[in-house]
Image 1: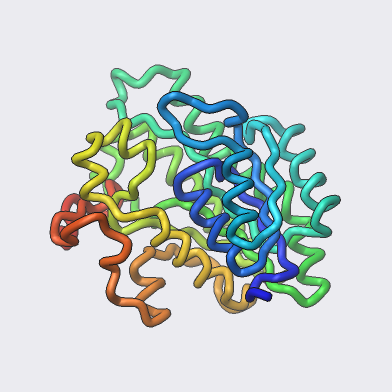
Image 2: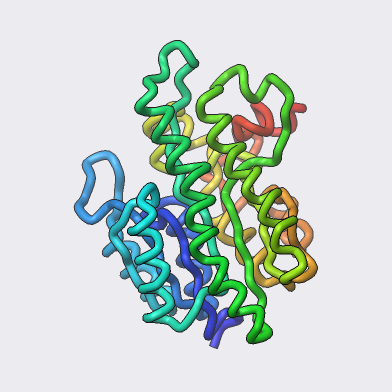
Length: 284
């Protein structure tokens, strides 16, 4: 019996990386985990499928519902949420993890890639949250905490964050604006909306393929740091914890974990800061 036994999480994009790490962490606390993702068949550059992810979730101690779908589709998202409620009885936690990335400068960013980022990141977060609100409200009526947690950076409108990767920045900050708006909109109902973001780059396929291969992966932390931070946020009372833009190491420090060496692949002094928070660790 874990802390989240009897609770259900609905996660977008949990076939691999951060989303899968969060799913496994919640499952280890007894949660049932439903997730929607596109990868039904193995991809040469992207490890894992919805089926391998479901197996990891169940091995961790939770129940899994793998749903093949695209969060750009209104119908598929609504059907996935309804299937989750039919299977597990409700939704307590929503984790908006699915994200598309292209760091090309404006002149070289194809509009097809720009549209993909806006549709998956900002619109997808809005859509998944919207579809789950009635069931989060039902959880509150039953006296349970209800959380929306979005993997997006703190809102900071300084030009430096837009100048380097304008298309991607607009998409990620769109997710953060969903947090800001939902927190205000749902506050009176006790439904929490928060964002979580890493201090450093995280070892994911995106970092491997887009940010520098093995060298970048060596300067990254493991996805489990975000999973542990997500767990700490979701265990807080939803009536008391909303509208926050959390950073992973700060959440863990509040929970009493200050030695983060277990999340690194090597020397922590070589960690690279996330692109929305700074260059090298410690840089302002």
